[in-house]
Structures are given as C-alpha cells and as structure tokens.
Amino acid sequence: MPQVKPVVLITGASSGIGLACARYLADRGYRVFGTSRRPEAYPPESFTLVEMDVCDDESVRRGVEAVLRSAGRIDVLVNNAGIGYGGAIEDTSLEEAHRQFETNFFGALRLCRAVLPIMRQQGGGLIVNISSIGGLMGLPFQGLYSAAKFALEGMSEALRLEVRRFGIRVVLIEPGDTRTGFTTHRRRVRASFHGSAYAEPFKRALAVVRLDERHGASPLSVARQLERIIRSRSPRFRYVVASPVQRLAVWVKRYGPDRFMEWALRKYYRID
Image (cartoon, rainbow, N blue to C red; front, side, top):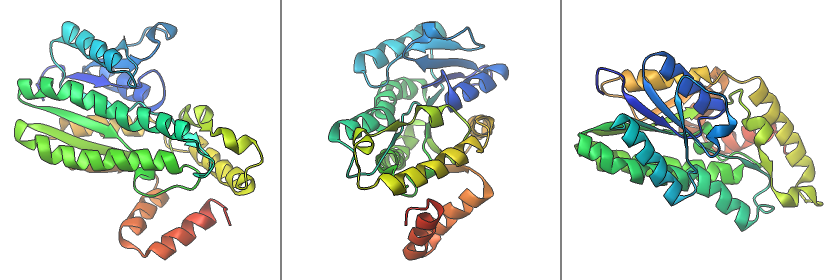
C-alpha cells in the first residue's frame, strides 16, 4: 500500500459495519469513499459518500469513476454491502433468492470487475470481501443468506489465486454476530407470514438470532481488523471476527464430525 493516505472504497457505508469501517479508517488518515444508494439522505461524515447501487452495472461504473476523478486511484476495495432474508428455504421464492444473491454476491462481483483493471494498472491493490460465519456453515432459516456467502467465499478463493501475480491481494473477513441495524432491517420471506409449515421453529430460531445480534460485538471490531489487514505486508486469506463460542463453532465445523455440528445447530436455534 502507498505510504501516505491509501484510497479505500467501501460499499454499503451508510450504516453498520461499513459505516464503522469508513469512520475508523478516515479518522486514521486514510482517504475513504463510502457508497450508498441515497447519499443525500445522510449527514456529512469524515469520509466521502458516493452514490452507488451495487445491483446496477451503470451505477457501479459511475461510482468508481467518481472516486477516480477525485482521488486518482483505488488502493483498497471493501465489499461490504449486503441484505438478509429470513425464512425457510421452501418458503423462499426465486425472486427473493435472486435479490439476496444480487446484492450479497453479484454486487461484490460487479465491484471486483470494475476495480481490478484499475489495480492491475497501478501494480497492486487489496480486495477485502466481508463474508460471515454464515458463509462457513448453513444457518437454519437463513439458508439463502448462507448460500450467497458460500458463493462469495468460493469466488474469493479463486480470485486470490488469479490476481496474485498482479500484486493484488484478496482477503475474507468473516464476522460473527455484530450489533448493527442488520437485525432491524432483515427481511422475512413473504410466505413466512401465511401459514408456513415452518412457522414455529422459524419463530424460535429468529428470536435466538435477534438476541445474539443485539448482544453481539461492536462493528468497530471489524474496523480494527480491517486496518490491520491493510497494514499487513502479507495478510492471510481468512479472518474470523467473532466471540470465543462462535470461533469454537467454526473450528468444530472445519474439523469435527458433521453429525455433531448438525445436532449443536438444531439445539442452539431451538428448531427441534
């Protein structure tokens, strides 16, 4: 990274993890551009808020061009924009599934494709994709959210291999439960309101999720980890930012028996 004020582009920076990261880096001398679909709706910040809809090719192009006109380069891309749908997989319509993937996966892909030529021309750069521990295990009644994060993880693994020779690094941050507006803004699939066969276990699982998120870590924990990654000469691929219990769950998922993990998730989310 350049020694003076690296230029950082963060999607979904009007709230939650994106806002925390943008403020944190800007306060430490980074030149930060955040994105929002409606930047005029938010008060002035210590960073520049750029209009961008990650679900629209032309909007992404205009937003990236605006950053280049202002800063002349992009050193770090943080793909953070995301939405969440709650509900059983059977209850999730294809339209709802498409919306989940359009933002959480294809939005990140659009930004990567828009920024990679710039980074190659610069001779290097860093892409940080904000995944989730839900991208490491299928979470009940958040199946399409997990699926989109699984896809992001797979794309990131391949991309890291492809762009290494250009001096571009690709990193995943996998947060656990975090106190943000994501809890309030989570969307329930339409069929969950109309006599779903999964109504009771979904209700119990959603109560657990909401409680965990409201008592989760501050988004500043992700922001601090992001800066450490930017400052690292050789960052590793994955960084889990979660409570000790959730870090243990990730370890068990990777190395433990599948049946035990299934049993633990059923019990934890009270779906039996």
